[in-house]
Amino acid sequence: MHPGPLNLVTDVPGLRVGHADDAALRSGVTVLTSDRPFVAAVHVMGGSPGTRETDLLAPDRMVQEVDAIFLAGGSAFGLDAGQGVMEGLRAAGRGFAVGPVRVPIVPGAIIFDLLNGGDKDWGDSPYPALGRKAYDAAAQDFALGTAGAGFGAMTGSLKGGLGSASCVLPSGLTVGALVVVNALGQATVGETPHFWAAPWEVGREFGGLGPAPMIAQDAPLPRKRLGEATTIAIVATNATLTKPQVHRMAVAAHDGMARALVPSHTPLDGDLVFSVATGGKPLQDPVTDPFQLGHAAATCLARAIARAVYLAQAQPLDLQPTWQSRFGFVGSGG
Image (cartoon, rainbow, N blue to C red):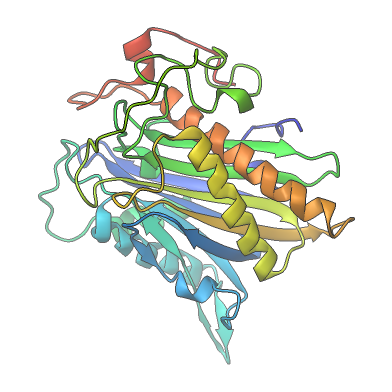
């Protein structure tokens, strides 16, 4: 497997990603959309999720495709971002057809970033406008690190952020991941600069330091309170998959989260993975292709998590150091 041209989820043909963030608020929204509707599913493994419209993604539900998925800061307030995305889709004539009416179905998930030092003393919620702005900004290339829904993200020890990665399988199928890392756990090993995801790194995309020397892991203590931590992600492929197959890809992708964040899937995190299949490239082997798609989704997600932390940028009044400022390394990030 090798990365796509951009090493971003938008290496999956047709996908676009847009950000909107507010430095004073220290929060933002990220939207993934496509030129046409796509099959989607979700799998939740954290104990404190915050979601919108996820019930419709179950394999037995009537709606088979959606037009966009959003990730947002703001805790439950951030779910309002879906309204702004709906408005953008409605203006574009997109949505689930019910007779002459089209109703945009916009699943999404949020992280808790209300105690990150930003100005949260708003009147009307800022998230609908951020959602619309993120949808309107959707493009093939987009920023990583301190951007969009990851703008105000933190982890157990270092500043979090937004990451992405991609890979191309020998079959020609493309897989990508998009993630907001706001975890209770750590992306790095102990007090070292080494990433848990190092065995899956491609080139120097998060520093090229390799795995850390093996160290004994004590029983961890939570560094955040109930509801303050979440890692939310989207994995995507250009394969033609059914809804149950897409759901299975989301399940497999959680392995990548566990490889890159220690601990993960705790009762205090809202960890979840959306999965997307844009279609256009039928499976050549009904056994091998789904098998490899799950592995690739997990691998891409692990890499994307490390890139989110590695590429986070320092901002005034940060409550945590960035990886770069703490360890003093400057890698390619490519």
